[in-house]
Length: 181
Image (cartoon, rainbow, N blue to C red):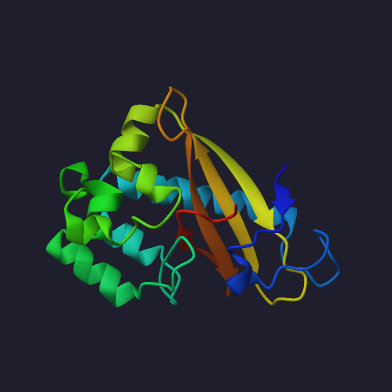
């Protein structure tokens, strides 16, 4: 059963307020299955360096890195095309430490600890275990959730986290990095 929490960093999107499963909260346990499917597809895209699939999974408003303003989908696409920035973070450890790339995530508490790309972390982690946590937002018209990916084998960090938003019948990746303190 998915759990629920009220995050501080995700509040800009979710307007977090009262208890889970409130009368107007659009999050419902039945959304956990489709979210797990979407998260598994995202992980598969990362492991197989499928940038196009990853780009299709992004929220239309872009991708937040920690609590920074969203990076537009067009900007993420450009970084993927030039194999810089977020391309390195997702797929290629060899370019992560370049100052221009590292600058994108160096202020994030979680991401600055990564020494390998998400792809290499996922490959080394073994069979990942997913934990879905719905984010409490009863006054909004959309649902947010965090998917924590835990390593089967010892890894640093022990888990990575993706935040998704459910709008117009679809889950989309909205945020990576520090999602909640």
